[in-house]
Image (cartoon, rainbow, N blue to C red; front, side, top):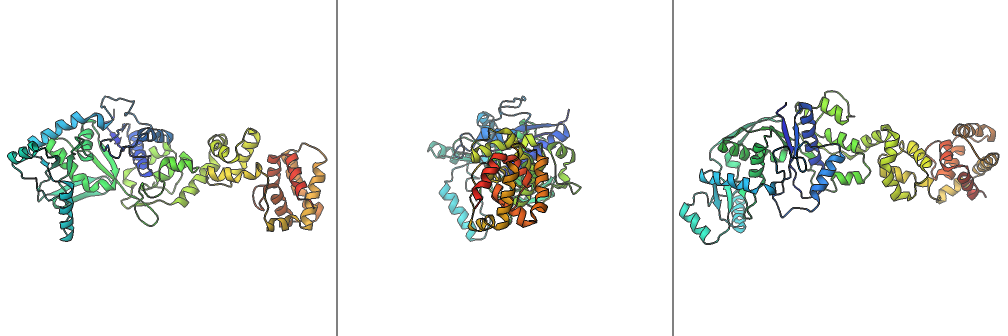
Length: 476
C-alpha cells in the first residue's frame, strides 16, 4: 500500500473558492495517481471568522466537482478527529512541550503595543515583525504577569542568524533568512492554536507525506520546518502552488468578485469545464491538449509540469471550454443540468420533446447554461420586434414569403423535419426570392432574430400551429 497521504485543510470561513478547489483537485489527482489517500481536515480554530454552513458547502462543492475524500468528517480513517476545534487537548500538550524545552515563550504584549512596534520598524525601513520584548522574560517576571491576570499568547522562538534551506517540488531549493521571520504566535489568548502549530501537529499525527498548498504559505515554511525540527519529527515534502492572478496580474482573492465554486455553477458553468479549467491554472501537460476529464488528469498530471509563475484566470478561456463541453457532453445530461436554469427563465418545460429539441440545437449557440436558457426564450414567449425588424417584416418580398408558408402549412397539419427542410430549400426558387431577402424575414418571424438555427429546425420546435400564428400576426 502506498504511503502517500495528502490533505486539503480549508478554513470554514465561506464558500469554497476557486483557489481552494485547485488545491483540493491537485491533492486528489496526486493521491489517486500514487495509490495514496486524500484527507479532508477542517481548520476551524479561528472562531471569529467561522461561518455557519461553510463546512457543508465545502463538502458539497467538492463532491459536486467529483472530488471525494478518503478520510475526513464522517469518514474516520483512524486519524481523527478531523475538525481542529475537537483537537485542542492535543495542541495544548505540544505547546507545553515547547515551553518546557525553551522553544516557545509567553508574550504579554498588547495589540496596541505590537502595532506601535511595527509602525516604528516601517518608519526605519526595517522588517515590521515582533521585536521580541517578551522573549527573554525571566520565569519570575512571567509568573508575576500571569498572577496579575495579564492575557498572553505563546510565540515560537525563532533562532537568530540562521539560513533556513528547504526543497520544494515546484521551486527547487529555497532559502529564507531567519532575520525575515517573525516569532510566530502558536497559541492565541482564547486558547485556540494558530494555523502554524495546528497544521504541523496534525500533519505529523495524520502522517501527511506531501503538503500541497498555495504560494502564500512559502514564507511561513521555515517556521513549520523549525517546529518539525524541535519536535524531532520528519518534515513532509513541500509543494507550493503558483498564485492564481486576475488579468491585471493582481492576486485573485475571495474579495475579488464572486470566485466561489457555487457562484460559477450558479452562472451556468458545467462542473466538467470548471475542473478542467482549474487544473490548467498552473499545470500544463506535455502535449497541446486542453480537454481533460478527471481520469485523464490522473494519468497525465505531474508536479514537474506545474509552473512557478502565477496563473492568469482568463474568463474568455473558461467560456470557450464550457461551450466545448456544452456541445460535446451527452445531450440527455445537458438537458438534465439545464432544467433549473430553464425553469427560472421560461417557467414551464413540461413539453419534454420540445425541451430536448431546444437543448439539442441551442447548445451550439451558447457558452453557459444561463445563456442557453436565455437563447431559448423565443420558443416560449411572444416575439417583440424593433422598428428595424418591422421594416424587414413589412417588406414586399417578406410578405410574399409569409403567405407562401401559410399556404403550404394549410395543406396538412403534420410535417416531418425532412419535409420542412425540403420546403425551406425549394421555396426560394419557387418565389424567386433568395439569400437574406428570404432567410432574414423567416428567422425573424419565427425566432425573433435574423440569425440562428436552421428554419426547418425552428419550425419543428415551434410546431405548425404556433408557426402559423406567428405568420398571421405579421401579415399586412
